[in-house]
Length: 330
Image (cartoon, rainbow, N blue to C red; front, side, top):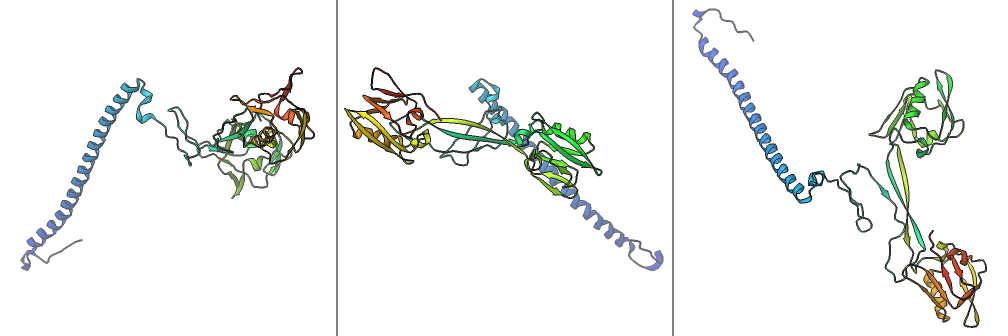
């Protein structure tokens, strides 16, 4: 802003005007200086807090290291594992554990029972993690075979094998002039071709396995995941269905006490129910602590359609009427 005067002899108080303008500018400067002081004070306070926390952490680590004798045991090096339902499953993690989410399928909870056996349920535990670049395509559901990829109007062939990984697939696409990449952190696969340019010649399932979605002129996948499956065996109880052990419906003939007894077995007959039926007929049958089923002074003379002898692994000594089950699992 420019201010002009007609002359010093005009009689105007120009001196006070100048002083007022200077004071106004100075007031703005003073305000900024005060704000600067506030920021510096806040920074100093935060630096002090950081210093105090560092000292406190150092002291705690010394205490934990002295307690456990191993530096990796300090409290700040621990990984936390949580469960969505602590009534069913608890979890813990070591300091070397990698960050991941595991989906655990519980088929049946253990129950208290006086009868334990070697008849076992299978519980499947599926661990799901984001696929890595070196993850094999077969672990994503891709079968070996040929696919065709159209590049600039010409279909180029790619041979997929059981040993191919996400990385080798990317390299094969790059080799025929297709831009492709995979992000291990997000699990997202990208390939720069039109949605109709993949011809799954041998039904490898590549598009379904990568669950591609057409995006503009390219494909991008959802997060790719691989899973590993472990089988856990747990002892069956008297509530275990005979059908779960491989016994079929039918009638079993058992000879004991100089008589023949017919035992009917259905899809709802349990191991405990079978034991009860024999005990009602004064037949000595029991399960020991190791889960071995023993039938004393009795023989299964006709198993009918039940396949019970093979299913329970029963064997008999030719010199006695005692039948004992083997070490069974399923």
